[in-house]
Figure 1 (cartoon, one colour):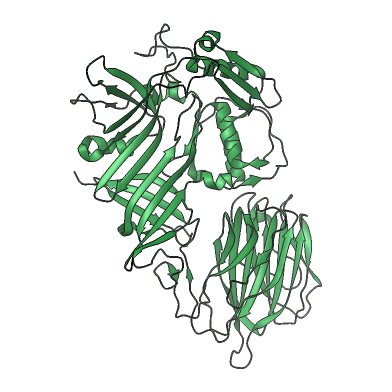
Figure 2 (cartoon, helix red, strand yellow; figure 1 turned 30 degrees about the horizontal axis):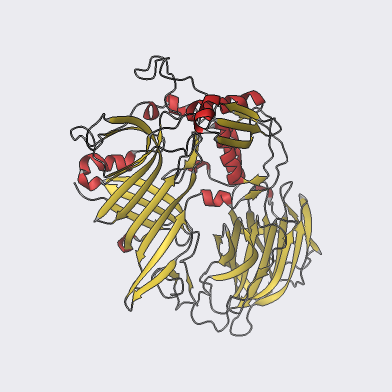
Length: 620
């Protein structure tokens, strides 16, 4: 059997094109799931990945402006230019628009004038800037609510034409660029439309001595305070460029700073209400003989990690680069360390405003999760959401997206995390009782040889971290519901587990949860906390488990104590998956575990091992 090929790719331009950087990978560490199981109610954490890359040629150094992951110099392109915002934003767009000069040898194109308008209305007007017949007129419109289709063709004077657009999704951020050649009689204002509830900004600019359809390029700038406007190759070095940025989700007081750009002057800077903000900068490309270039080695670049083994590809991680940290170990040796975080980071930075409609209390947990993801602009293709078992209280869409996602899952007592393929994954509370991968052991690991798969490390615990004999559960708007085991308190003293602000519709459901947690935790439990396998010890049998086991899978562990005694055998749920690999050299996979006695031994009618009422409790 061959050692797996580790494939690491980065979307440096954030356009869906991943660049393979596997040849530079020195080490890989991945952690996904719950790092520590302290109660039957599991809270999953953001998945992380750390890449250690060979940077001896400085290709991963953000200050290296002639490396392979930069915009090239030596062309008329003016490179990526960046505007900084005083507030970090959730969604953002950057646009570059260039207008060619009519006769560059005689007179070059230039900005005649610009105006700006902000509005929270569905229809509004923007003042016409100073204008002359034949000027090229550019209108940049951006809004944060509804759909992009609500940004209809502007009205007034010669008919406007759509030049380009960018859309972050429903109720997020939509931006469009319109243009036209001014007629002999343009009105004093132009009319614009947007969705109800939108905060919108319009910037109108007039370019004199310009001709032809403007050239353009655009890019997303999500989850940042530093906004790229992309490079483009204009018609010539006598073109005039406009750079637009817009964003939403950063609260009031956003101000833009273009001082880091090459000779671009800010013309407009505005914010509508507390949400949508936009700015425009401009410059002539006259005298520009080569592009200044710009690095693409930046935070929030999408990262994808896969393993290829026996011709089959396995997803290991998808997320976003946190930063690129460069160190030099010698005159010709450098390493770039790139920590990455999955989509939970995006949700944790997304604070949502209230929706116009409050949902009824009959909303299932799965519908709530989908609604939060919709509001955060998360693609439906990047979800695997099972139908929930619990109905929730009504809610608006205000608050932090990540907090409400986790609270919804805790009320369900389900599983919610980002899977290895980048999808937001949700299983309902009854999945561990219904799905065969959780009711039937998928593999047996032991130290007895034969059919038992070998492990290299097994951590045994017999402590009080999961001992709970007093449980207090409170729902929003409800009263405390308390379940206690007095005998356990007498023997082990009081151990309290409290959970507030759950979303049950009634106190009876909160009490049921309290009693369920108590039934699983009132006695200390000897258990295995984690298990590690090194697949190279038995490639044919262990690599399939390293790559195919999922969070929530059931496995069996056998341990024969040194010096004799009865064999310890227990089933466990996998609650986290960690990989630590050096390409072509070493691979270790570690799973954090939760004993099936804490939530996986409920009675199932007709089941061979879980159909005995004297041994299997009733589920919650």
